Length: 167
Image 1 (cartoon, rainbow, N blue to C red):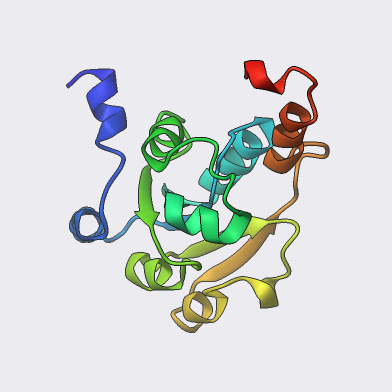
Image 2 (tube, one colour):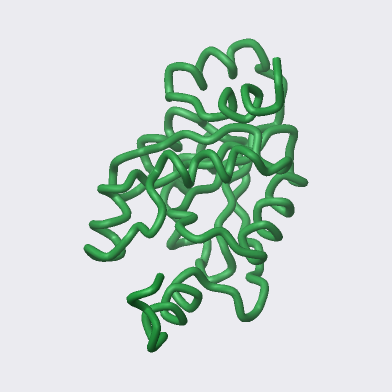
């Protein structure tokens, strides 16, 4: 199997994840989620730190429709297939699962991670699925942001550009 095929195989459905999990029941699974619309250094740092918390990092990726509902009609910048491929190409990411709901709650219930991780702008009591994970013996953690990195800031640089018609 070539590298591209290995990357593509990291993008899975819920049913494919369940099969993978059944074959690797002892693995410590870490889960996080987000839009990951414009991947940047902050994301890379965050995902690498999340992966260090277990044997396998599953990233729940908001679908295009979900991103539009959360961020507005001008988002996402990159379609879900492209965002999934970029995420899957990262060494830190074990699997990517696209979800269409506004929150990852149903996906968290399906993945049933040992560790649920979100960025430092969240408090544990505000993390969707924290109760589900802790009730099942898992841990919920936050990882601090890399200062100065935000997809929204990056996107606003382009929209504020006097040459934005060239983008």
